[in-house]
Length: 460
Image 1 (cartoon, rainbow, N blue to C red):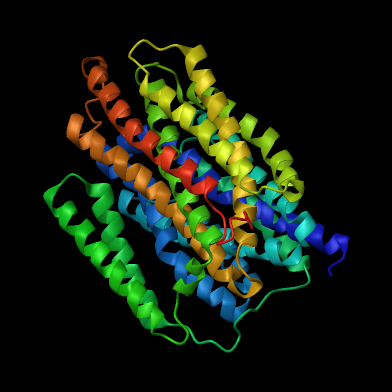
Image 2 (image 1 turned 180 degrees about the vertical axis):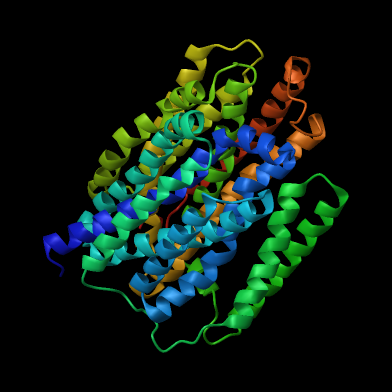
């Protein structure tokens, strides 16, 4: 048992650390038009700013989870914070778009390490009756970053330029490092294992081919890449079953609750991550809002998330049926996604505010209870893999969401470089096609969440 002071130090370290990842993602959405103008790149290239970040986290998550089992969660947490800190410092003076993408890749790796290690530390260190509460705070700080990201970026971009966004990351990294240094304790679940280097490389190649194919659809070469990536992932999974100490223990999927909860997580993020991308373009393009005005409008969603997340995390500790809150949250998210399908070229700000409100409620009810159920569905020895897979499916869902977006843009518009009053109708077609697909994913997510029971029909 850890003292209350030690647990609170850990909670502050984890919450401040996890605040970084969504902040770096949401802030960059409103900076994209400015970056396009400075580096003279098109919309497909600028979309790689966030896609590279997500891809890096997906590639890094599996080997990082394995390393945390061998060497402990704290060293991985330190690594993630230091890498993010150094990358952010360098990003303030970048001379070219290509270097920006390299640094965004490094930030993605660092963020993956922070996200994975922090959630495992909270799961292992906090007793079961307080786990949902701790994870609720952890998730709330994610939403705080989502809440303040657009608004802060709008202010910083207008006053100091887009490079100033990275200056905000530096003190947050320092705070997390300071508290992590004070925390006493760690978890090393497999100290005698060796790193499966060949498996890590195999996984990295397979997931890179698959994800790059997804975001490049509907190009003919992208279809080939998706097929090749899927084939390689099947071979990777088969190879993991025959290894004594694989980089990814696929046996964790034998726990039915874990498997169904992972599916629900993927569907949740896959159906909703592109909303901020599309809505920032919709508000600044069709709505003719400034970056700051658009950021303030988008602030509505995370306000609801913040209010509900801690309460629902605490409620999940006491409620008997662990499926209820995640399923309800997923269903509410589906309503918001369906409302986006009905958007038109006539901007109704009350309607948009309602979308953001409903989406925030859905996220707030879903996230912390879903994460708590996922992490509690496996034995302690498997929590490294569980955390890695939880983050992996979340990040893969985000990548898939952006893949849907870019595919629909390519089909209906070619690119967003020509987004103007003459092409607003086509942009609405893109939104409708994208979110019809996303709504179907929401329905699948609702089903997966509600059926997340063990062989005896129990939610845990």
